[in-house]
Length: 155
Image (tube, rainbow, N blue to C red):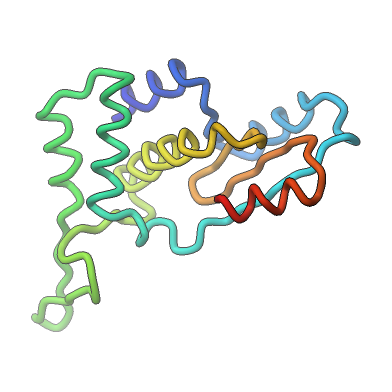
């Protein structure tokens, strides 16, 4: 999935930070900061909210931009099937069946990144330039306070 993520970032110009240094560099490069207002978003329960449908939507979007083979899609979706056992009994989630994006795993991080790029693409039309690190989003604009509130509601 690394190839797909690298190509998506390069072709779309969308930004996902990998560490704090990248965020600091981003902030330093903003011109006329005093004229900007900033928006901070934290997507609550980000990993559990990534559903099979959302991942499929993200993969369909991505496949219009970069080549993703059917086998790659199948592997990505199959790797989200997880079973949990405790004391010899299967643990059942309240919803979602056996589909799970595991937090703390390399696969879960890459899955959250592809979904994050898809979500960033969905808000590109707004007057805020958003970038993200997984579930933490930061954006800036030169909108009025009222305009900013309208954008928050749209998001």
